[in-house]
Every structure is written in structure tokens, then in C-alpha cells.
Image 1 (cartoon, one colour):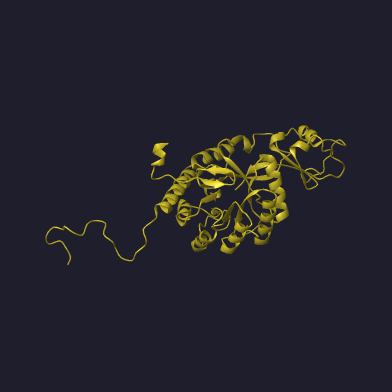
Image 2 (spheres, rainbow over the protein chains, first blue to last red; image 1 turned 120 degrees about the horizontal axis):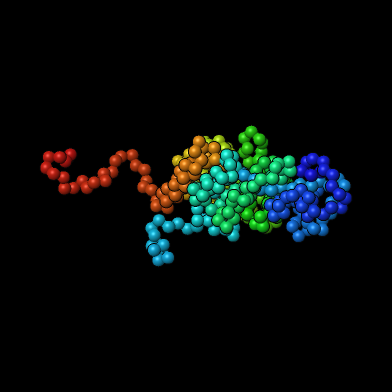
Amino acid sequence: MLNGSPKEVAEGIAVEELIETLELSAEQVAVEVNGGLVARAERATCQLKENDVVELVTLVGGG
Amino acid sequence: MEDNLNDPTQDAPLILGEHTLNSRLLVGTGKYASFEETSAALDISGTDCVTVAVRRVNLDATKGPSLLEHIDRERYVILPNTAGCFDAESAVRTCVLSRDLLGTKLVKLEVLGDKTTLLPDPVGTLEATEELVSQGFDVMVYCSDDPRMCVRLAELGATAVMPAGSPIGSGQGILNPNAIRIILELVETCPVIVDAGVGKASDVCSAFELGVEGVLLNSAIALAKEPLRMAAAMRDAASAGRQTYLAGPIPKRLYANASSPTEGMIAGTSIA
């Protein structure tokens, strides 16, 4: 699951590659997998597996 | 520098964790018509600190400029909030994500009770504050104007307590100035900032006249008919209110007290 919707990705894809595939700015997103932060330093080594729940967030206007 | 030392209108900066702010107005970035308008309003308001929200990346949207490209991080301290969180766990997760995004530990905690009132949930707010402080965050806490709640948050190590003047986005102003007064007397270890409810410049001014260290607002500027003009009004109101507080207003009295000398009146004009 990616941001609440089902998403097919290559088995074992690293979080860093996922961000690249989605053409997102690596600096402007934060990543959570199964409720836990994937810190910037871990993105290259954190590999996704089936049924992982991924959240990709950024900053938006707010008060 | 010497001139500055002798400036009778100078003010101390507002210290929030590791940040030093010269403006005591904190301004939100939500609800503007465009990023350009956001950027212009922030500029005119004179703020040094702007709030933002953490949300899912919109994967369907056509790639366009992001808010971050319109906020100069050299100029503004970015204060990520936990708006929309209704329990402590979600709020803490949001803060962990924002710290990773920004590389800073300053956060604005909101743990809300329900979607209609957006009033803070006191128990969830206390739980989240305790957890975030233990994880090393500098936590600015949105809360109700309950003096004892503010004391408890300060005791937990909040970086600022931020009682609502009235419900978020309501424009009702400071509904209970006496509660704010009591909070200011009881909370000694961190700044008290009025967060939410401001509608007009006079609301900002009166909050500062009470002695609060800062005011945080968003809708009052963003949803005004002319946001940029309102940004100027809020900037000036913050200055006027703060200077009034520092200057020490005269006590109110029932009867008049002549400003002109009562001696030396010409013949036949003086009342016995």
C-alpha cells in the first residue's frame, strides 16, 4: 500500500528507488514503512516487501 | 550598534528552543489563494516563523512547484504542525516525519478532540507532549486556555504553551482574557503564545497588551478579502500591542485627570 492505495512495485525495491521511480524530490519527502520512519540514511538499504504499508509525506500549507 | 542600545523601543527576541525570533508574530501558510500570495503575505507580516502541515504526497498531481520552494529557509524558521491528528500516537508519528523532512526538532503539537470544534484533547495533548519531549523535540503546544493545563504542559518541558484565544479559524478573538492573564502568572518556565481564534488586528493587539510573548495566526490573514493588507495590519498590531505592554499603560480611573496644568489660568475662567 502506498499512501492508502494499492501499488505494484518490483519485489525488493529500495525506498530510495521508489522515490526516484515516482519522480519525487528526495529532499522534500519523508518516508514511513509500516508505521516507522525510514530515515534518509536508511533509504538506500531499506527494501520493500509484499504487503508493506508505505507513507510518503511532504510539507504543505497549514496553520 | 550603539544607536540600537539606546533605542527606547527595542525589544528582546523571542527564544524558541534553538531559534531566536525578532518578530513575535507567527504566521501560518494554509488557505492562501496561491503560493505567490503566501510568500507575499509572509513577507509583509514581518514574521520570522511560519507554520506548515505534514501531508501525504499527492501522487496523482501534475508535478508543480511545492510550498517549500516559496519559503526561504534562510529567512524563516519552519514550524511543522500536527494539525488533523486526533490521538497522541498520530501526532508523534507526524513529528518524527517532520523532523526527518526538515532536520529540525521544533514542532507545533496539536492533538484535537473532534472535527467540529477542533478543540484540543487535553489527555492526548499531555501524552504526546511527554513522549515528544522524551524524544528530544522542542514542543510548542496548542492547548485550551485552561491555566492548570498550561502549567502541566510547562512542567512536562514544553518549549511554549499556546492557548487558543477561541476556536481555530473562528475569528472570535480572545474570548477569555482573564484566563490568559492567569496563565501568564502561573507559567514561568516557557513563553505563552496565543494560538488560534484571532480575526482582527485589535485581537492581536489586545493579546500582546495582556503580556503574551507571541501570537500565531493564519486564517485571519489568509481569508481576509485583501490578505496582503491584513498582513500589514497584523504586523503593526503586534508591534503596537507589544510596545504598549512593555511601556506600561496607565491604570484606568473613573474620573478625569487633566493633561494641562490646572495652575495659571487667566482671570475669571477657573472653577472654584
